Length: 580
Image (cartoon, rainbow, N blue to C red; front, side, top):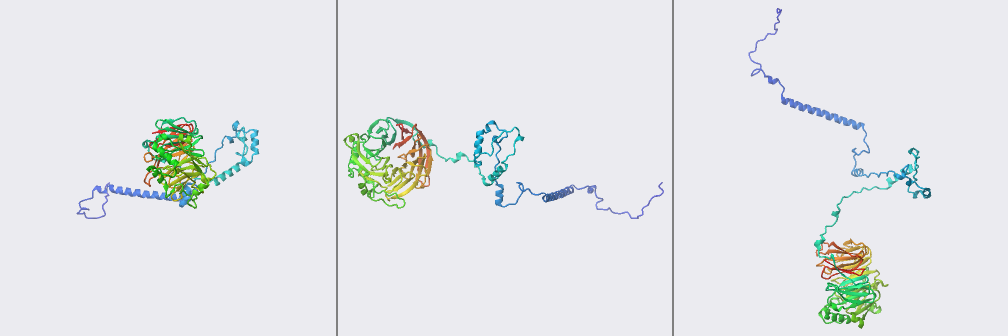
């Protein structure tokens, strides 16, 4: 079996040394390395990722070549300039066509079906005057409805509406209404001001047209349509005196200076000058009578000398230095003494014995009915308004009591005058017309400024005691605050009433009580806090603080000269005192 043994054909000598230093390699040399496995795995992942990206890029290229872009798709990326981009993304969709109503139903309710008379009326109208092109008709089934003949016409009209009616995109602003209101102080922090009814002066049998408080604040005078002027004591309500003037009394006013005890009443065509003897000392009463009966003669006392000297400017009286109202020429007024002699506009008449016993001293007969009059602060000048005079320049008449002179300072005047006031400290005169307020500088003999009245016809005007601001009421329920240094337009225009503003008035002592009030025919008196600052960079602060409600329309109001009290008069013959 083993007879034939193979023998090596290679002859070699046995080695004397090992193949490597240190002997044969270990078995660990033949196991794979963990680090090498991580490196190889990382390389494999990178190669696979590159293959996937190449496949995606190739797939996108094929899609772009095969698919067409959607022209009206918002998601499609179209290269466009800024204007086209804004126009494209800010387009306004067309309004939807309104859905059909019950009127267009193929089986409307019976009340929508027209009668034969209605059908005849519709057929008689022109096609342009008809609201609809068809009349509703009831069908038993939808398949019985015939073809609509106005389909093309309706589509054409729809296209015209879309083409010729522009569409505007309006951004809706979400604003908190509370943020729109100005930040005003709390009215409770602005006290004192009149807020409660304290007293009523009754006894009048007709409408009370005017009220006035004496310079001392002790007496109250009222003008009533029952021909009487009543004088009350403010604190007690006692009726001190009644003066029967024989006609409805339009206005009553105390002389603003304490040197004269004078009460003036406007009765139709005359001014009645009354000396209420109970309201002052005997010496003051005697001085007032001498002052009125001896024109141009000084009484020799310091008070009268100061009064006469303080009311003259530059050697001429205030009315003598009044100027022409022509805005283009600004010519100075001519001497009016000659005109006064030719045209008698007023006449001073001394009272008779019976009238003197009642307290009446002088009557001034005017050429027309007197609507209003106002005193100069020094008490020597009175300006009367006669708006019904057919001669326009005679609407404004100024009287000088000490010299018994009469002047019509505005020779070229064509507008209707509604109210007038003197400046409290400077030789400036305010004249309110139907649509403006004119300010005249009596020293410079010219029109200083004209303020526009943007509302209706002006009704009343009041000047701030500092002289830089004034308020105007009008027939459109507005009260306008004007700043003479601000603009010829109102600084603030307040609409708080619902009727005509009959009267406006500042408190005489605004340094202590910065208040003003407005009276309206809606039966309300609105009291405002009007603070004027010395800093020209700070605007006036106007805050409504109180609404005094009456049952009847309020015609007039007057402030107490010392206290924050307000007197109001209504057409039911009640005079009310409101206190803090």
